Amino acid sequence: MSVFLSLSGVQSSSPNSSLKTFTCTTSGLSCTAGIGRSTVRIDFCISIILHGVSGNVSSAPRCQLGRKEVILPPVVLNSVQQVSDSPECLNVSWSRVLHLFPVAETEIKNGHLNSQIEFAAKGQVNAQVRNVTVSGLCILVCLFRPDTLYTIRLRHRYQGPASPWSQWSNAVQGRTAEDAKALPNPGHATGP
Image (cartoon, rainbow, N blue to C red):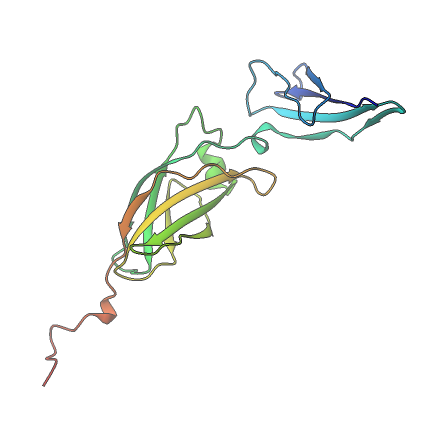
């Protein structure tokens, strides 16, 4: 018995543009279709057809933006700065290579990125990962201990669980501010 898998689809860059068709066929479990000079800013519709001895079985078309299918490239973490009034917070500044990162600044501002931060305090063996809200290229993250040195990385995906996570950014260190409440008051004597 021989079974073949076909992947076929269409791509369109706008509602009025012509459709481009792509196909691939394999007797294995995966197949890659060449789509030429394409971009992740295009809508894709994909159907899978299983060709068997007793006939063909087709999936329903699956359509969505190409950006939801791609892994975003890792961003560059530029700096991690303490916040003097908030010892549990750090300002995390990041950037991206615009022609490789297909998410516009307005989309970032409107919350189209899901983001995670990975952090570990100095001497901590296991890093922690937390979801963070990103609406710009500088984010305020408040989940740290005062006066502690952290190593931090950041990653993103486009609009939720349908998209895969990017690789982690480069690691940058930053120290949280001292807790002013924990410091002795210079106007008052301490001790006997």
